[in-house]
Image 1 (cartoon, rainbow, N blue to C red):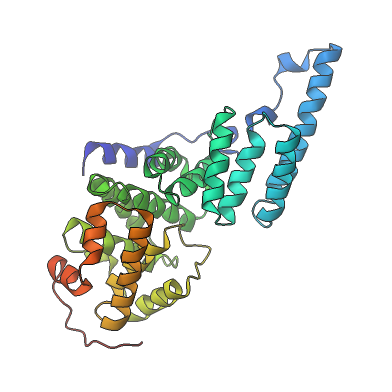
Image 2 (tube, rainbow, N blue to C red; image 1 turned 30 degrees about the vertical axis):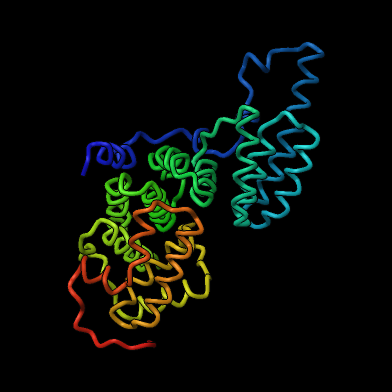
Amino acid sequence: MPAAVVLLIAAALGAELPTAAKLSARPEVCAPASSSDASTSGAWDQLRQRGREQLCQRLARAQLELGARPGLTLRLARELSRDLPERPEPWILQARAQARLRAFADAWSAWQQAERRGAELTAPHVLRDHAVSAALTGHPQAALASYRRVLPLLQAWADPVEQQAIYLEAASAALQLGPEGLEEAGGLLAMARARGTSSGLRAVIAGASALWAARRGSSAPSDSRLAAGEVWRFVELVQAERWPRSWPVLPAHELQGAAALLVEPYSDVVSEQLWQGHARGLEGAGAHQRWRALAAEPLAAVVARVAPRSGAAKRSSP
């Protein structure tokens, strides 16, 4: 494992706990006033403070709806951006709402608008939404830059399942770079496997590890093997495009490739269908040529190169 990956993982595990203010998604403009600010008593200062309080109240209302009603957040943020066209905060909220609605192209456009207005992204939840938007619109360098800042701040997510999902998202973003991202992706997948529990993410981790191994030309890690029932449940969800909330936000074609590799010992028909969808998705996304060339090969040839064939009897359904 290269030094860069080791340092990245060490930072994620050993960094000092950030302050609550750093973990908060509250905009900087709405941070508590310092004692020097509070001591100002001029009329202009009082008007300016009142205006800031009104802005923060509207931002807070929009942000509170983000988890349950992102559509409402989007509407409120658009109203704010019309009233305050030079402020970056309404555009950040628009971007985050669009990401939650899986409108990633619109989200990326809103992130760019926020950056033009001087937005500085520091809060972990904001950085993750930015990273997801970048990764799902073909901007892996920007996605990785944000994920690298998120990883040392994982304590912002108390649920270990969400932490695993972030490692998987970051690994997928690294793989978008092509062969140069293989080592970093491998380190991130190892961290996801090490933190694995009965979280419902076992199949996603195993499939992502199998896809990484195929691209690397090596066998998949032995600790990522699954029971047949887990494989078929994963395949069903991928085919139906029903992503559980606990899953990482990944390109659909990457999940298809992962599912194709996992189900290959059980069904030639299903695995080839998924592999073909994986290949079409890579082409549509303009993925790295090496990954497209690999996906263009018959799946059986890929599997034969990277691992011995299983002795399990093939079947077309669970």
